[in-house]
Image (tube, rainbow, N blue to C red; front, side):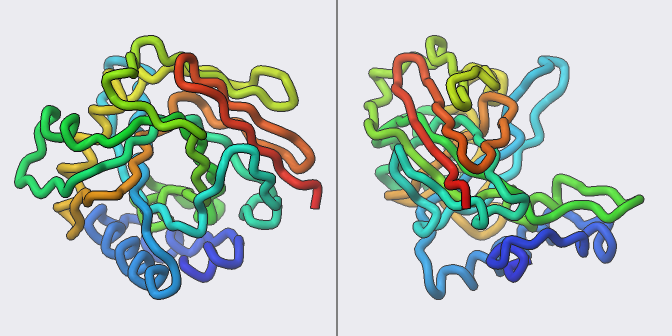
Length: 253
């Protein structure tokens, strides 16, 4: 898996050899990969996936992955298509939090999480999975965990806001590619409530697998929309009402 991630190749091995992988095993694999990465890179935080609620009758089943310093970029960045397993990134529009103190639990409450937030920003996550099912096999959410939930890079907005300046009920989001709207969403789709609920879930999930939210961590809380593909030569603009815009381009080669 680590080789596939580094070389931007797609592997079908998990669906063939571990079709019924358990969640604890999947996180053990992800943790081992993270330790290998930390020999040459720094972890900057965590991402939550599958937190968007589209059907109120279906409870979310979120998972998390790690984010590394080497994947952090500033708005306006032009990325290289060859850095993505499928030749181009997908664009996820997210809400990011910075954490200013350790959250040790054993149970982290919403109020404790809120008190630990140092800033809020719009963010774009660049994703491109390198794990897929072989023909006739099934790709599971636990396979996604082992594959670090398709994370490649993070582009936070230029401005970080204090939490008391942000009303998530007003944060509608759209992604434009070359000026055309390709996807729309809203911050309140996260966990069917708001991005804070996703961060609370993460604070209480990490200790099950050997980690805690620490001072300095950046959290992204899950995409608020269906991520469109950004082809080489194109430019994406993520527009977050009340929070600002983020622009990203992909080079033609």
